[in-house]
Structures are given as C-alpha cells and as structure tokens.
Length: 500
Image (tube, rainbow, N blue to C red; front, side, top):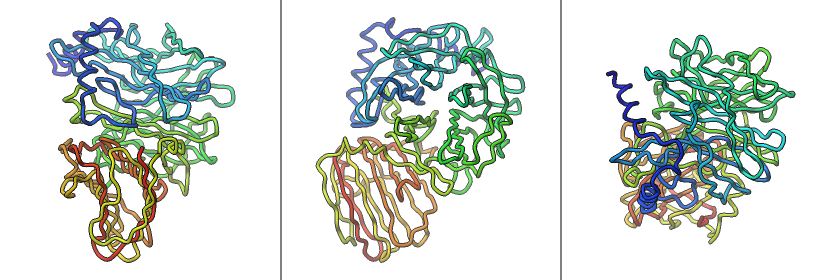
C-alpha cells in the first residue's frame, strides 16, 4: 500500500462528522489538558484544544467582525485517535474582545467529508454568504475537491447549500484547487482560488458568477511569476489607493539569501488594478509580508470605516510546537491595519489596541550597557531608538533576570540590517526552520519600534510598519523582562510601555 494511502487510512479511520457526537468526557479531557499549558496566550486567539490554522470568512456583518478559523479540536487524541475538522466561529465589535460562538461549519456532508477547507465570506442582502473548499477522497484515495457554500443569518444560523458550485478541478490543473476568496464588482461576483497546474507549478484563477449559484471559469491571473513554487494557497485580491494587491501563500520556494527562509511563505504583488475582463495584472516583484518565523495564510476584510484589516495564522504547517504536549497548536496574529506606501504594504496593530492598554509607563533613557526597561508577560512597547552615536543596539525580549535566556532583536547601523534571533529564547523549536531572520534596514538616525509581547509570541513592527517580524517563542517561567544595550557608543530611547 502506498505510504500516502496508508497515512490517509490512519487519519480518517475514526472520523466523526459533528463534535457533539463525541463522548463529552473526551472533549473535556482534551480541553482540560490544553488549559494547563504554561504557554497560553493572553490576548491572541487560540483553540480550546487541537489545531488552529488558517483564518477564514473574515467579514464585517451585522455590526460585528466575524472571524472563523480552521479547526481540528481532537488532533492529538490517542487510543483511539479521533478525526474531526471544521470552522470555528469568533465575533467581535472591536477586533479586541472576541465572543466565542463555537463550531460553525463541520465536515458532515458528502461534499466536505474529509475536510472543511479554507474559504471566505461576503455580505449579500441580509445574510453572510460563505464559500469554501470541501475536501474529499475517493475509494482510490485520490483527492476530489468541491467548491461549496453556506449562508449565515443575522442571528447566526448557518445552513449549507446542498449543491456544489464547482465539482472537481478545471482542465489543465491538479486536484490542489482550493481557498476561494470572494468579492463583488460592478454587480457580478468573483472568486479567486489557489491552484496547481499539471506541470506542478502554482497559480491563481478567477471564477465569475451573476447569482452566486452558477460559476464560470474566467481564467488564470496573468502574472510575471509562472514558475514560482508548486502551489499557491490562500489567495486574496483587493484594491487600495487605486492599486491592486494580490496576496498569496506560495509553497515550494527555494531560499535566496535572506529571503524565503521559512518552509512556506506568504507575500504579495502590488500593481495596477486587475483587469477582470482579460485578467491582466501588471505588478511589481513579489514581497514577503512578514520577515519572521511563524506567519502564514493571511486573509483580509474591509472595516466599516474603509480600513483594510488582516488576520493570519501565527504558525506554519508541517512544523511542530511545544504546545503539542498540551494537545493544541496554533494561534492568530493580532489584527493588523494595512496601508500602501511607495509600493509596499505597511502593517500596524489595529488602532483598537488602545482598549487593551493599561499601566502606561514613559521611557526616556540614555543607555550604554544592558538596562532593563520593562517587565511583564503581556505588554506593548513603543520606542524611538537613537542610532546616531552607536553602531549596534540589542534589545533582549522575554529575558530572564540574568539576561542569559532571551529573544534578541538587533539593530545594526554598520551592516544596515535588523536581526531577530531566538536561539536562546527558551524551548527549542523547529530547528529545521532556523533560529535567525535578517532583513536589510536603512538605518541613519533612528529606528521606530512597536513590539507586542504575549506569553508565547512576539510581533515586532519596525519603522511604523515598514517591516514586521512575527515569531512563536516558548520562554521559561520568569522570562518576562526586556533589556536594551548599546554595543558600541550610547543610545537614547524614548517611548512608552503598556501592560496588555
């Protein structure tokens, strides 16, 4: 028996369609173990148990943001292993305080029997229309995708639509065909899908519909990148400042110097608006969206005030994290506002973060040797770091009292780069994915930093969001200090610190 077939048989041998059908004691046991983890985040979304990955259906509907995520709550059960998969539902009026609405879409029909894969949402009349990929395997263990839909009413009732919009995959492509992102333009509906060509290269294709029921293939988006990885996942097209932006998560890129260092990447093209008739897209070079270790499968939505808001998986598939010992893995990044500047997407924490801040402290220090500037498990630190009189500044995040264990952020004016190093951050993780990330940074007089620290993650926004580094870290108890030192010369730091 081929190894892939054998693995699928093992994975699906104890499938359950609805979590309610599982013995409650098993679910409770998993959730209890997860709750005992010392690495639980304080303000990031995490699962009660099992695996969280891609954000889905991110939409503003009925005066709230609705955010679903890929959900495998019994992923770490044993004796027996139980397989269950679906979308989990969260809602918020402010992107900060989230209501837990429980299971939303589960893999309980013949169109999604082996997985309710990623998709998106669009407000249509008085309902939230949801479109997603239903994953199935036939008797020969060959993948058969379906593109299917559901509707959610204003009171949260979700009904699946019984007929698939698209069955199988289009000619010239493989069955790796998934992750629809939907939008409306000039009265018609469009959905962009990630897909793999028969020559095993990645692409994005567009379908069009006038009624949300009948969908026709428009074709492939014409980009300059025809041999760029073997699969494009989680595509997202939107327009901002009269420009078109295409987000993708390409798989199979080879590392180039400091680029493409993660197992899988997420990034974007900026260009003229996509021509929806010809699908021509004149764009700039591909740029990675995040420079850190743990960022994938982004999805955006439009806020009522016109802001473009991004969510993403704070993790990457096929990597393993220390939380698995407590039968869970995965989180979502803190929501980010996107803007466009000089052909580059700028990311910053949503302004609603002010609702989380308390215990404000001002920082105004001249620093040479290592100096502790803040303390706390969950905090935000905004700094202006003066680099005129020093060649390098080290910032030790999540450090112990002796500053021997830490996650180090280095601002190097001599080499004109910024470096994030988690070699000494605590629990060793994903050595195959590396422990150091570097990016060129033009440093002249100063560097602005906005650093979000949670129990087991850091998100670092550099120069007002020009660069972002996202990383999972797993420090020991007591690693809750931040030190700064000027390696040569002196630095002045001015800013604020808040507990979150």
